[in-house]
Length: 458
Image (tube, rainbow, N blue to C red; front, side):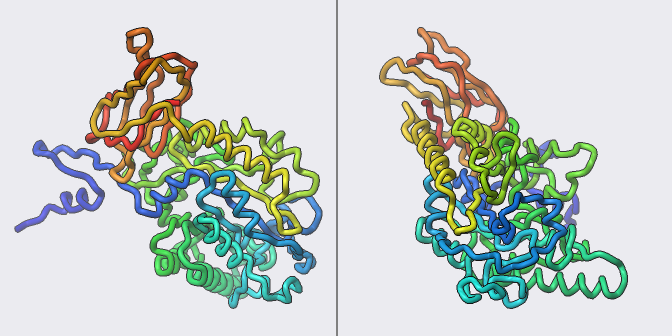
């Protein structure tokens, strides 16, 4: 039997062919790791590195090119990763990520391939392993651990944008040496600490095709059930296009390319990573990241002295929540342990307030239902004042909804409360408070039968 190669290609791309030989879209579905990521909704990333201890304001441009004069300034006398994770959990975070290495090149664990690590310092007689402490604390509090590996810049080895300076044989030898170190660190971090929720390569990870290390094959060997973020070959999630903690609406969880980093500089710029693509062939949800200390013109991923005034107020964090989690994205908050090895009290208080406020607003809906099909009804026992709805698709079967409207029964007549396109994992909408006796969700357009995991009003 002769097989059409065009049919084979369409099959591999997840497309189907109807009886009229027309191509129709088949929505991608997430892996279990991507489902876990979406369900987590709130993620903490802890930034910790040598320059936390120098008593100076962090300057990214300078730190990327300036080696730390004395690595023994690293001396967190009161280090308590349990306290870190407790603070993150109070905020509602279900995943926590640690910068195992960052721009200085210093590694927060016992590396056998990178001598610039905790083996070199006097702290804990050179036997400390903060990555292990961190992972243990995550397990203790029921939070999934992740690891951030910063290899794009390394001020100790003189690496800038993955590369050593120069083109001669000496530079080529140094580049090969650095690539081997990177591959060794990735193997250590992916194989020593159990299952990870995510392995995050800051700024991407150059692969062999770009003269860089082969980190993807190591990741796939040791962490096959994790999120890979990211290089030109693969991205399991995508950046949302800013560090504001927000994404625009709509923000589809599907994307046209296997790696968002690949074509980010083309003629359409950052639009695809912000909005996604409802017809994208790859499931790749957006993340929304922001440092907790980013208020009033500041944007601090690392602890700095006298910086507590720049912790975001509660109302700003809630605005981020509505424009990230409520827009089918995850919210990643950057947290900053101090030189003592503790999360500052003021940061902890604000995160607890944030977690409590999210719970106050969303733990107990006035009414909730779920179902399959184009219409869902919520009949209330009596007239109720409502001001927001939460809709969730069952994304295990893909993002199917393309257009919907929510209506409320007001004085015996149906009134439009909100309408939209993308639902995905979660869509939260707010409107002027209104008294209703019933609410209904009408799916006006979908690519297949809609499967609504939850439709609730508050």
